[in-house]
Length: 509
Ligand code: UDP
Image (cartoon, rainbow, N blue to C red; front, top):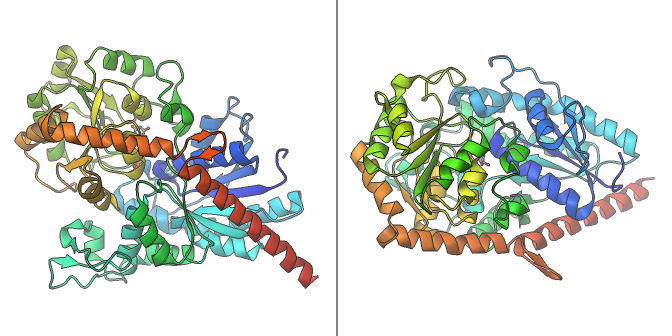
């Protein structure tokens, strides 16, 4: 396999918000440390990964960065064919996908045994997503150490894990509750819980899927967390204390060109990063942005797997139009409809798309957009986002403030932290069931896009936060940013574990 004699095997969850940062981490570990990396996943995800890293699409190796891909056979009853990624699944189907990841245990074990046979020793470490806690035991069984990856921030990770481990929160008679792991003074309103968490009693189907995975992940040797020490210092302390394990904040897991803001035209960063085909050519998208004033455009996206309801879509469109703010909106069929089906004009106000095209107020992009290039562009002034953590870091790294519309998972917690701790966000509404009037949409957008007042303040704070985020990944001579040091510490820790394993093995001989 060439490269370093040490080998790391990675196992991402089959969702773009998990695959994208893990691939970025793989590239970084390989580039900085020279280790050989194998990423194991199911066929559809290997297809995406392959197209991000190979010029030659028939190859399973990234020629430039020596990242190997290993396909694990996957068969999941209850899901349509070729749907081994959350991108086109409804919420309940995502539960089915999560449950069925356990069927990967045997092929993953076999893969590790094959690597041991080929390399003559176990891989130095397995890095697995926290939704695949079962991989910790598989790693132990073949005599290697394991580290858990969380693509969420520290606050979001703690909130998500503690919520699922402590259901039903003792909230029956109360409006507020306390989450173990957070300081006693920290109280959360019941409305912060997503519907599936509010209904959970520990014996429900979601708890039975998620709890064992989080608990198994607690048995790993530490966590690689997609955040920045300076951004979430306190939350990182709480997470370390709650799990009693090291947590290495190695974010933001973004290409260096994005952190330097040194690339806009020419290279298609998003395609190399996600393997997804965009609903618009990069050239057309940049040309459209070029035709607008600096910081005047609102970018709208609900991430790789979420959608809002049909009535919300209608009211968002109405509010956008009356706000007169230029926008790029990544549209997907509304919640409850076939997500891979044709987008129907009737989901939007009559002739909306035509009016937006003719007036140049809005650009509608079907399904997938080159998000990083949009956020990097000087015309982009704010991001209406579901507050998925990758989107948050991508936006803030470019000094772009956020209008929050959190939908699932830990997104409402992220939104709360962004508003209350960082002052870079304002919440428009939450969930896919809320009623949102066009008038409110218009008012909030105008407030955030305003260069004065609250909008101006949010922008200043987002720019300051962006500096902190980028500094964490800077290296000048011996001087290293906090996330680069955290990656060094992680590598030192796994090298120490490797030595212990060798000593242990010699003793047993
Ligand atoms: N993304 C993108 N184009 C899109 C939608 C999403 O490039 O049209 C990328 C985005 O840049 C981010 C990831 O997909 O890296 C979504 O992750 P996030 O954590 O924001 O949300 P999730 O999809 O996990 O809910």
